[in-house]
Amino acid sequence: MTRTNTKEAKNGDALVKTSAVQSVQLASAIDVPDDWCSELLDGEEIAVTGTEEMGREDVKLPAWLLNSRKEDVESGRQAADDVFWNTVTERTKDVLRLQILTNHKSKIWREENASNELVVRCSSWDSKTGRMEDDSTRPCAGCPDAAWYRRDDGRRTRRCTDVNNLVALDRDTGEVCVIKVKTTAVKGWRQYYQAVFHNKRRSKVAGRPRIADIPFFAAETVVTAAKMQGGGYTWYVPQFAFGGALPLEEIRAAAEFVRDQIGAYLDRAEKSADVEPDVNPASSTIGSGGSGGGMIDSEEFVDDFDGDANEDLAPPTGAGSPAKRF
View 1 (cartoon, one colour):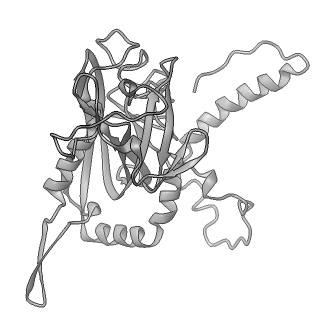
View 2: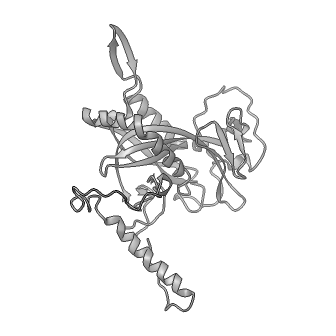
View 3: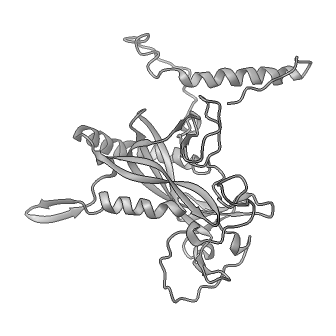
């Protein structure tokens, strides 16, 4: 958080100066240890807390972002594109050590407007009902903006993209957080899931073989930044590695948490869904090695095509240009 210099307050300007001073003081509150009050109130029975009117909507679920270009509250310097920036603490990490609890899939259609600004045309947290930018709704099933089509150059693309919202426990801090995986990062995430978890649990039930997924939370997942390049631009996406099996007591605790409490955290994860940097590598504010402005001529920024390669895919109609889909 940047300190703001203010002149001597005059009349209404006093509010401006007071606000600036408070913002600096609030930034230092991040350093308060979690157990600062444990011994002080040990054994005390206090019937009220004064926090009764606070709810889940008042507590943000931190998201870890790459390409954020945000300021690190500790160093005061802009975060590099290849480090993770925390949306709550405003601190950075090079490596995340996570115990993934669940993956919630959502959808989003973003594109550049006439001013080269990324705007959300439609999004859906439940992948069933989309909410448009004018606040109207429509079903995701059969949506023309989720259909594949061919651009003028023959490349396949689509407007709407899937987002994997990974709700996880940060093993360094014990904090529940979220990391989003989409577009160019999805392939690596799917490969990691298939290699580590998918159908890896082999057992017998009543003498018959049983094949099932190993829980996400049975392993430590190490997340680092992988460099991506295309169209003369460079950006970073999360890449996943197996960090080893976790102790059985941690697996059991996570299973109980997912069973009993994950719904509340998914509610908070939804509120974190739109908190993200300008990750369009074609934008002048992200990436390096390119001219900025203009759109990248690459299908790397969409999901893997899963349809008939010979199908005649007609472009959709409506807001925006099909060539400006991100």
